[in-house]
Length: 310
Image 1 (cartoon, helix red, strand yellow):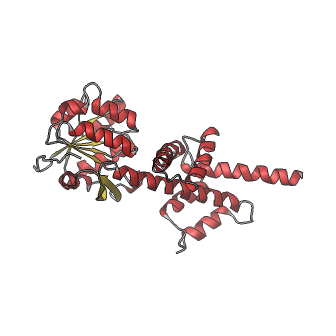
Image 2 (cartoon, one colour):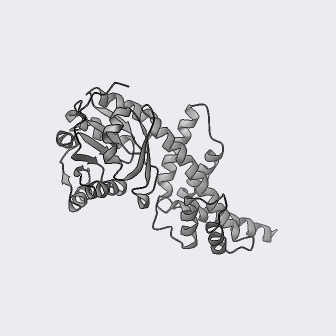
Image 3 (cartoon, one colour):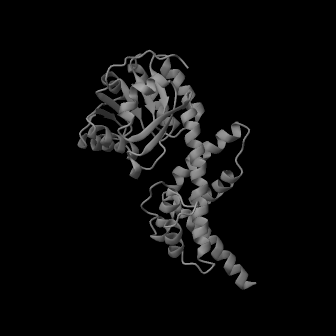
């Protein structure tokens, strides 16, 4: 990691690349706290949405880099990051030693280390700063951050407009590694919550009664995720996803590969991923992760049918 010697001038204007769901949350929070924002997205409708919220807009990433020294990226994955950073009119064309580039996307550590190496050739700093938290929890997010701690200190006032804290956890890729481990936990908690709710239907416990009783208790099994997943199942809220099955498959796949590459392959999360992929194969990919309940429910219905036939 190259030592960063950028400017410590106060931040007045923030660049934002990626104006999707999470990007809009960041944009709104930044502007509410008085920061000017210059936004870029390859999709015109997303750019117009940012403009409607009060942001300035840029026609290309390189133009955005020329107008801001602190740049946030919120993108779907490695391919989009590569294009924004190093493609035609990419950010790298406009970067200097005064810049800090902050990637909030969920990607693998190897991708971040490669991107950081390319960005740091310009003298700019690069931080991997993925988000722990859902859009509904904007302002309470935790940002595990990898990269130069001095650069993190510089940009922290901006980050704390939409997060409760940004914690330095190591070198380039460390933030991503921590996020992917969290996503493996997410996958497993989502699966057991969905499975137990499906079992309710077969052991004489109304699933709504089960959910209300457990969620309202002080049991150690209760988590924020269980409360969200269980509520979605009870209310059939699959078509208004907080996080889709396909996004969970993508994140868990990255986490599983990271663990495998470290000679620590996951047994439990690896098994759960099979059920996530079954959900996708059954056409549930764009539904909320709680739709895994449908996979387990159908499985148990088939078992019951076979038992009755026997």
